Length: 561
Ligand SMILES: Cc1cc2nc3c(=O)[nH]c(=O)nc-3n(C[C@H](O)[C@H](O)[C@H](O)COP(=O)(O)OP(=O)(O)OC[C@H]3O[C@@H](n4cnc5c(N)ncnc54)[C@H](O)[C@@H]3O)c2cc1C
Image (cartoon, rainbow, N blue to C red; front, side, top):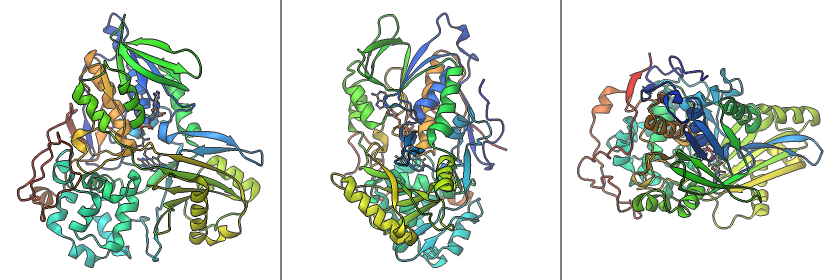
């Protein structure tokens, strides 16, 4: 039923495959078909639901919101002019190195026809620097060298001035080792330590760090280094990414929900899980409520908690039977990044034809990026053709204080008019705004404290981008990977064959650099460093220690050939 990823999942010959735990092909050998509640219908929950139902597990997917997709949700909305338009939780870049996420999407769209490439991803700085990733070679180190050759903000002189000893971890990222080296530093301090030029900071921050919705001083340097590795220095998939060709519900999740149902899963949206408790006839029971209906209780053999930070903490708080004290405290310590705004404007005039589908901005007040949706979204393109207008989406991250929509709206529109002056004359036909604060924060020192996929109960697992995953994966790909891992843990308990996973290679691509020992040059402890249990080395004078493995690794079996 599953179209397996045969051969290489991308163009990178060094991509690594992690062999699925062996076992029976499905649950047919068991006296009773196991039933699993997957709580949360974001990417992690959808991956777990697919992986389980394809092996014959009876899946009950329960999602609180009216639509699937979580932070990648989309829906339709009726505009003031009567047209039906798409709306998303916000622009998402589907990178080619998101092997497990793409494997998930292939279940409903084998050729990934609903994704389309965005060839460039320019970065515009207020002071006039403009960097571009178009037409760069994809393979390291040629990608980095070509980038430096063209970049106005990071030159060969800057490269020569880099603190090479301090920058060693960037060239040899291995998870979890990199967290042992850098997790107690914040991203800002690390870039200062390696003498990353100040005018090029926007490159690192806008492309990588701001994707975490946090200020660089609030983000772990290890997380930043891992991002550099995944997207640039450790992978030859390139920085070119794909985007969905319509609002996410239509392009991605409705087709995937149809696949789940074909595999026998029950998919319920608008259904909030209140608690998980010991079961009567089966091991666990999940108590959930749909709208104003009375709560229902579903007995299950296993649970995947694929929630966002607040959802997970709330369910764990009201479920005293879950986990042990240590695990519950770790969940309780998870934090969310500051709020962010996603605004869509339907304008009565078009933006200039040369405008990129997606532009990152830096130094333009509260504005972080601009998407021009008729360049890639079907419903936006139809609207634009019909009306002669443009649909733009504006993001503003890491908001301070209580967000005020009206003030923010004025702010982002004002900045849009500075970056794209032609929009100054445009009227707003309609607009939608989403202010949320549901992205996990990855603070310095937080890695070893994050809950891994396994919990103290072998039949309860956690999935999501908030989990600790000991592979070079981040954001959507961490969500998908952890969802498959959670399913594999449960399938393993029932003796059923799991699903193979892939990642960009661990370690550097240059054997010599990989052998260099990192000794932190200048002792610097982060003020808020590391929770009590963190095993991350903080002694700057000696080589850092390894962070112990946090979870059942799937054995890397091969680099694809
Ligand atoms: C604006 C924006 C832009 C982004 N851009 C990118 C990008 O370009 N590239 C990238 O890789 N990542 C990006 N991300 C991050 C990416 O969206 C996340 O990493 C990913 O979607 C996380 O998926 P998840 O399944 O772990 O969590 P979520 O998507 O948060 O899913 C958790 C689900 O649990 C549900 N839930 C919560 N409580 C309950 C309950 N009690 N009962 C039932 N259900 C419940 C929630 O409604 C939600 O659907 C972006 C995020 C945002 C917000």
